[in-house]
Amino acid sequence: MKTLNEDINIEIVEPNNKHSFASVLSCGLNGVNAYPVEIEVDISGGLPNFILVGLPDAAINESKERVRAAIKSSGLEFPSKKIVVNLAPADTKKAGPTYDLAIAIGILTCNEVIDSSNLNDIWVVGELGLSGKIRQVNGVLSFVISAKNNGAKGIIIPKENKEEAALIRGINIYPIDSLSEAIETIKNIKRIKSFTSLNLEKEIKEEINQVDFSEVKGQLLAKRALEIAAAGGHHVLMIGSPGSGKSMLAQRLSTIMPPLFHEERIEVTQIYSAGGKLNSNRKIIIGRPFRTPHHSASAAGLIGGGSIPQPGEISLAHKGVLFLDELTEFQKRVLDSLRQAIETKEITLSRSRKSSTFPCDFILIAACNPCPCGYFGDNLKKCTCSTFEVRKYLNKISGPILDRIDLQVEVKRLNENELISNQTSENSLSIKRRVIEAREIQKKRYKDLKINLNSEVGSRNIREHCKLSTNGEGILKEAIKSLALSARSYDRLLKVSRTIADLSNSDIIKDEHILEALQFRLSTFKA
Image (tube, rainbow, N blue to C red; front, side):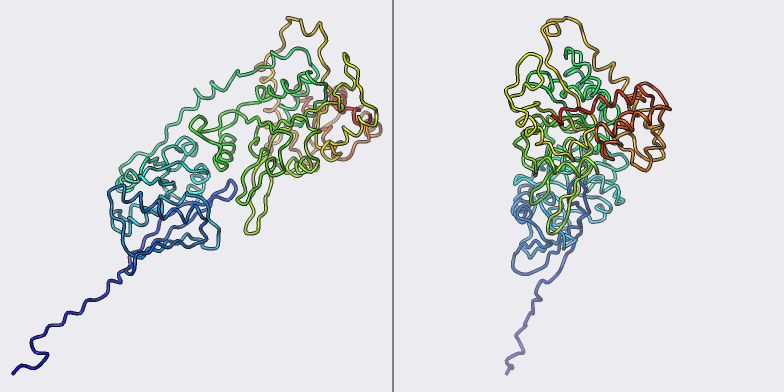
């Protein structure tokens, strides 16, 4: 007789608690600067679940469904297990769909579709569509710079971002169009040639000759002020009646400025990329920016802002021109917010968790009417405003803002002879040649200070580089008394004189250079 347990075989099944782990390097964006983010993926047994940790925002949380659909649409199996994805560092808020592709690659690495050794020193960024297509993301140029600075050998990016990414040399760029292509690229990473070709010459030529100074009749004094501004990086205020040509002049300033250097082109494109201002028609920034915000713009629109800080108009004008038409119509609070930016050439936007810094090195061209009716001092129409109304109107521009504007010029309306004249004006190209020569002189002079323009010289070095003629000091003393110049205005007067001397190829600031600079200090504001 058999006992109860003699013919019974009991098989004990161990629960599947096997863990698989993968790590993929990606990037986050803070302002225009990127920082490394490590995507850690852990897949283990248990009830199917997909968990994202590491302070993700709503767009990242939604990536779970995008990743799931993209993997299945690519003909691959999505694991029915517990998936935990950590975005490290865990104490930094993450935003945007930038991490979709890296999360998908991490899951596929855990599933052994991809060999983890092929991901060594390779960064991954990109947004996934439900079909597995890779969409472009903002800030790719910053991501490539960060990857290179952190020792990465290469970076996988969306195909639509390849032009901006190729501005950076010394790192392998792998543009891809779909998740399937990303997998094949990683599998054959050692044999694939990176994307490096970028021909800018044709695009640069296409940017030239849109408008020209030869189209502007008369206004020799205003043209001279803009030439000085372009040569030395000075700010300009133009005051004149409606129709005198202020906007037309401002729009042509960028045509006499030197083309962007490679490093400047990277800086400007980086801002536009971070702000989502690049598209299929403008994949990189070739020429100097020209921004014209409306006078109804808010402080956030002008200097930047938002819960996730975005660059404002002053940053989008970096290395270019910021034109504020109808200056007196801007809110006083908005104009005063420019004061720090003009001085420091950068703006820091602080939020509860972090602060973001945006560069804003621009030439400010401001324009306004001389009075509410627009015809104070006009040579054709009579002004209907009282002296009190004129003073009140011009007082909308605060003293501290005026102190920071180097050149103030009155733009008179053309008379009938000037309007019908067929005499051609000097074109932008010949003015640009003088501007470039003056900038080369400044570059050599300030090579030890690591600055390029007269407007950037600090008070400590201004005396050394702004040497005056014998009578120069006497002229300046008289100017300080008669114009009630502040210390800042005095320094700016010296810098403008230095630029005028450079345009004349003179080592010393002569009397005529100081006198010319003084004519750009308007007495209109004492009306």
